[in-house]
Image 1 (spheres, rainbow, N blue to C red):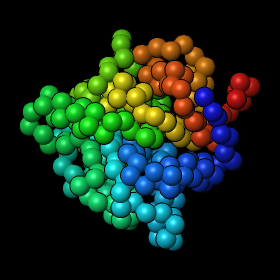
Image 2: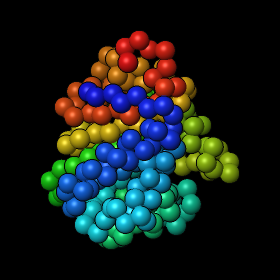
Image 3: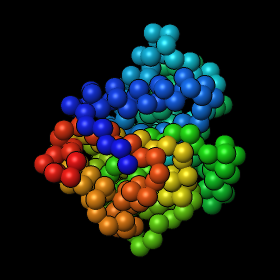
Image 4: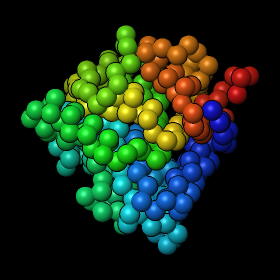
Length: 244
Ligand code: F6R
């Protein structure tokens, strides 16, 4: 595991974006595994800026997102499809057909999970997977539980995740109760993983993820076993830990 200590959110976003920048330059047809949320927003801003300045070309890039709310249309401004379209895809020259998220409106949820697993398998591996971490240690929407679930599945979101995500909805009751997420095996099969963490409110869970027991009760702890994990975290997230 490699830990890069960033000064603050902006510094973290710039450093993490540089890792994706390098990946795309070295392999223009890279498969990027992407995440949504606040932690990665600045990274997308940096990548869009690199495209706008003519330094980065997304024409061959393919993307596959970690997760999507069940029941939301891609045009709903709370869906992850909408987030990706507005924060990255509409701002760079990526081909729409090369961007993939679970279909929140799929009628047959089991078939949608199977479709998404085959899609990931068809890529012969995600080249670089971006992750944030939830306050309860979730990655994607793999919530704390009794076992690591390997492949794409539908999850019931925990109360803590619903509360954390309610900030983005008009009312907490509007937060969907279920979501599609890549499983732990899907995530761990990525060739490289970049985890972005910012802010003192993530310090405790980050310490547990990086140095605690590897347990499905803290899903992100499994990342300790990945052979090419880069953690880009700011001073506040690295907190007072003397281990990092
Ligand atoms: C979203 C995702 C989630 C977030 C996590 C942190 O696609 O995969 O696991 O990374 O909930 O969210 P933020 O960055 O908003 O704190």
